[in-house]
Every structure is written in C-alpha cells, then in structure tokens.
Image (cartoon, rainbow over the protein chains, first blue to last red):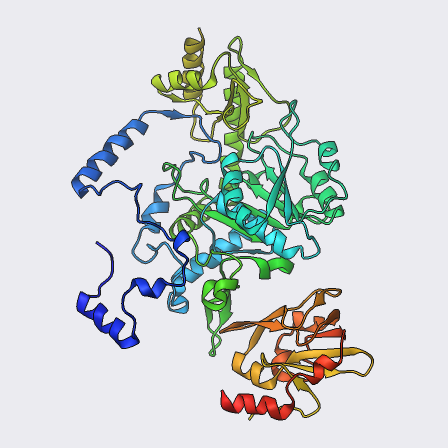
Length: 452
Length: 129
C-alpha cells in the first residue's frame, strides 16, 4: 500500500486543475534509462506474525556467543539508562525536527552532542551527525575536494589499513563525482604506513589524506609525522577515528603542529548496541575555517529578545531546500535517535568513565593476545602499539577456524584474507571491557581444541 | 524603490559592473538583488587568477532564505576579491555599490560592457518582472 492519502478522485481533480493527463507525465523530464523499474529483487511482503517469528529465530542465533569480533563495530556495555531515556517520546525521533526552533529539547541534545564531539576530537565544530562511519568518510573526502580549491586533481590519498567497508562506501559515493581514492600501502612488519612510503607521493596534487587511527588492524599510525608531512604538501588531513580510543589517545586536533582538518568516525561504540550493521551513526567534525563546506546541520545557543537562552539551527549549509541541484551533499538531516543515545551515554560515562572503558578494552585485548599466542602455531602478526584490536595468525584457513570456534560459542574475530589477500590465516581480534578473564580463558581453550 | 546608479552597467542576472578606466572592472550585486535576498549570511568568492567567461558561475551569495549564484557579467581574469565579506557579508546589504563589492576583473574586451543593460534598461527589466 503506498503511503499516499489521495483518493483516485483527488488525483483526477488535481491533474485536471494543472492540465496534466497522468501522474507519470509529471516525471517526463527524467530520462527513461535511469528510471527505477519497480522493486523486482524485493520478495513479496510477509505478515507481521511471520516477520516477528523470523526475527526471533534470527536473534536466537546470536544468543550465547562470546564476542571477540570488532572490525568496525564494538560490543561495549550500555548502561540501562541510555535507551530508557533515548526512547522516551520526547526524544524518539530519527531526525532533526523540521520546525526546528519549536523543539528546544531536541536542539539542546544536539547542541550537547556537538559540544562533546568537538571536545573529544579537538575540533572547533561538529555537525549534528551523519548516517555511519562510511558515509562520514565519504562526506569528509568530498569536503576536502571542495575546500582545497587549488587542487585540480580531485584525488585523495588513503593510508592502506583503512576499514574496507568504509573504503567501499566512500568509493561508491565519490566516484560519480569524479573523485578518486589513491591508496598508500601499509608495511607488512607493523601494519602501519611508513612515512617513507607516503613520501613517495611528495609533490603530487592531492586534496587530502585519510589517516585511520587506530587503523583497521588496531595498530597506531605515526599520526604526528604523517599529519605534518601532509600539511607540508598542502593536503588536508582527514582523521578517521574510534571515539572510545580518544579517551586515551591524542585528539586529532592535536596531531602534528596544527592538527587534522576534518575528523570522522562511527559513533556506534558510544552506547549503540551491535545490531546486524545498524542503525549506527557517524560523526563529522572540522576546524572553523572550513565549516562552510561541512554538510548537515549545526545547532547553536543564543538568546531571545528578552535575553533568555535558547537553541537554533545555526548552520544548514547548502542543503536541498535552498540549493537543490547545487547542494554539496545529500546529508540534510541527522541520525537523531542514535545520536541522542550517544549523548546520554557520554554524559553518563563522563571523561573518566570513557577513559576506563578505553583502558580496560586495551588491557583485555593484551590479555587475549597473550593467552591465544601461548597456543603453539598462533602468533601476533604485527609489531608495535595497538588500541583494542590486533591481528593474529592461526594455522590453516582462518574462516574455517572461526566457524569451528562459533560452534563452541566463541565469535573469534574477523578473517582478513577476503579484504587483504596478503594476510592469509590472519584474524583480527578484539576484547572490550565486556570481556572477563573467564571469557578469555574460554576462547583460549576453544581455539586450542580447534587447532589440536 | 531600489537604487540603480546611472554610471554602472547591469547584467540581467542582477550583477552590476563598473569600469575603472585601467582595463579593470569591479562587480557586485544590485540593491534590488540584495533586498530580494534578505540578510546575507555568507558570500563565496572566486579565487584570484581564475579566468571567467561572461555567464560563468563566479560565486554564491547565501541569505537566511536563499542561495543564489553570481555570474561573471563579462569575460576576464579575477584579480581581487573583497575578502572583508568573509566575516562581514552584511556589507552587501548595507552598501551594495561600494563597500559591498564582490570581485574585480581584468576585462578582456571592454566592448562587452557596452552590451550590458544601462540603468534605465535594468529599471525597465525590474518594472516588467
């Protein structure tokens, strides 16, 4: 059933009034070849009863697994208050309200969110959030190309150990705008990009450089030297970060001499439960001098005519409703509900609580690596510092080992070979603050049994 | 009634242009245009050194209710932009023909300016709109 309230009589009357024969005729200017031909790959609908049963059965498959899987989405403890509050009627919306100023409470939440994110990333401004980490990165890449008007290449460099799904999402979004991504390889010994490999691109025309920190392998890049080198080349620096890690790592605003220019990431670790890939949310922050190229909206605090404090939509640059075909982005609202949950999560945790989460996650990953690498044949793949993920190599086919671990109740990690063919037998392992010593021992016992 | 100085030439798209007598010209938007836009909050200016052909998009003015492209009225090279507008776009509203100018061009062919509307012709365009 289409969600259109008009009766056939209404439609006839409206068409007659404007002198058009059919609804299809209203779309004449859209070329035939780019029109969607129905939803032919979508199966027929199911009843509510059938859907509920199917979802219960699928959810049950996730039950009982102890999670050591990260690779972009992380299991963290979410205090019960977070979703109890976020799903209250006053907050329960997916969007920035369209009659913005009539919704002071929602605007205040967004304002608090922006303030927290700007503080966490060391940037001047944050927008009201975007869809997820991948969409955030693609918007950052487009922003860099728009900002760097002297660069004619429309190319952006990317350090090699970037989340492959973010990279694919970004390629899908920017390619049709003639923007190209160029990859700098990572070093096989320590899983990070060596400055020397980046220096091979010196003197070339790029709008920006994307640095993931921690990178997809959990390893820490030499962000200070890389940022300074990129700036010396005139490239903007885009930091793609895990927000939890910022409680103990240097904020991107402090990288190198002048800091990163744009900071993006997936906000899921901040109070959003793992949920088959989403809905999560993305964050996008930047320095003040390029805020005009930032998509989305910014809420500001002001005073009314009587001097009373209030919140307003301060910036909604270049969105469809004022620029339409010339809009610089299709981001015109935000991921309101997930952002609200993240704001509540951050206020409950506070800087100290978030630091504890980050430190415990790092510590538990250390313990996990120690336990797993005590099994003969299991080794750490990369040297160097890491946050709360690291790569191990197991004998044999990593995916088969992971499947056998799942049979024993362990979600053991992420097999890297599919995205990184040079890393056969390699598994990306993560242990957050939710893992206990007993969990880690259970993983070790299961892996030893699988490999025996 | 909006102000339309007689010593300027006008594009149909509401830019004004003033020849400076040294091969350069100054460009802005008309009093009518700034009034129709309302309070400007942002002006995006071209880069110095860019070559423009008459009709090329050369910037954007954005107000609280609309965003409009600025077009080059004649062919030429951008030689200066009014950087004061970065922080004070309201100059365009307050003083569109003087302090609110947008950019200066080195004009390729001054005869092109003669082809633009005179003040009377621009007034007639507004009257017929």
